[in-house]
Length: 158
Image (cartoon, rainbow, N blue to C red; front, side):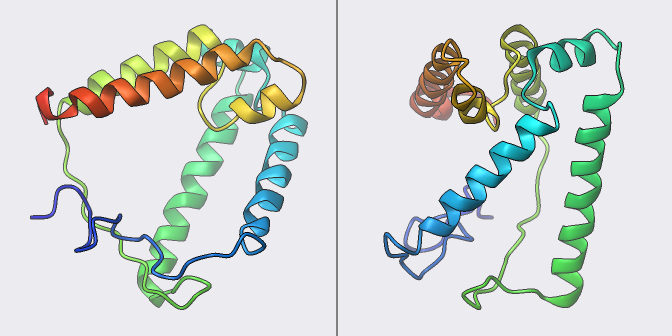
């Protein structure tokens, strides 16, 4: 069983085999900027909205997260049903997921960090882009945490 979801080249199972040019990557920058603007306008990056969510004072963030989960579920089902391919024509493979108790610990750690900092990894750059430069500390901490996990992941129970 392929637990690492890697192909024979060591790449992720869905890693594109076609290389993008520098100009070709521009589309990702444009989508990222659009996504950041949507995050700002929808108040998804607001520390106050995040605190309202964790204090169970507002439905706003739960509605956003619930909508994202519903769209994700629908998208995956459509990809599977119609065998949808990438824009480059490559097959999209969705490997089966297995549960392990480390996901509980990781989820709790992620949630605590989210509640304390008011930021999850997605909106970090949008928060920095709005002028909340203190979020750079959160970004550097997320990078450091990812690096430490990479060092010790073989020693963790999976």
